[in-house]
Image 1 (tube, helix red, strand yellow):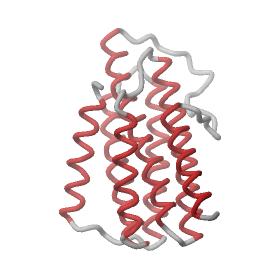
Image 2 (cartoon, rainbow, N blue to C red):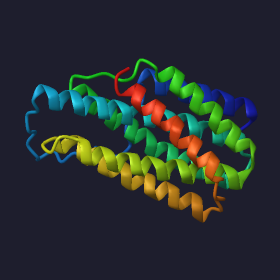
Image 3 (cartoon, one colour):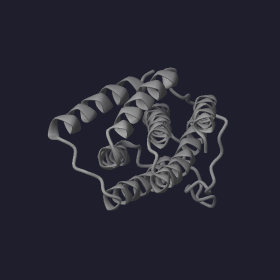
Image 4 (cartoon, rainbow, N blue to C red):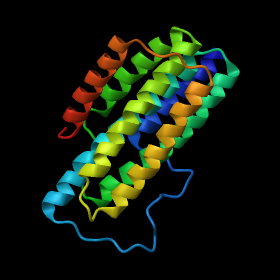
Length: 209
């Protein structure tokens, strides 16, 4: 695509992500035959807060991959980022649907999360292919750890949310592996720490807002 086409595609992705105008290309991992177990109010609120945080993570993932696709001129890397972003859009649709089922909402700060993640992704992409892939690998590694913590915190009877988070965790691990195999460099310890601190601020805020 020309640069103008790429910019238009970026704008389209942002609008669809923030408006909720996206659909999953894969079936939701929640088993259709598995009966839903009613959650009490405290459980419902906890699941809603955790799935809102996960939805925010997917908003950020769209922004990151979108920006890094725009920043690189390597066609193979663009295809890799596009493929990962399509799977992340499944996560976006699944988490939004689960929030609706729980009677909860997405974060009111999604435009802010998207803008911040897009800027970070664009910077990583401008630093070269190895750094860009290293940023993907480290981001996905931290997201995988974060999702594992959610699996441990979700109510035991919330099988639907757990099924979604488990599939997301498997996909994120594969994205990190793909990035390493494509030539990701190890990021400096200070950068990895800064990423963890930024993620902590985001997750704690999105838990409530």
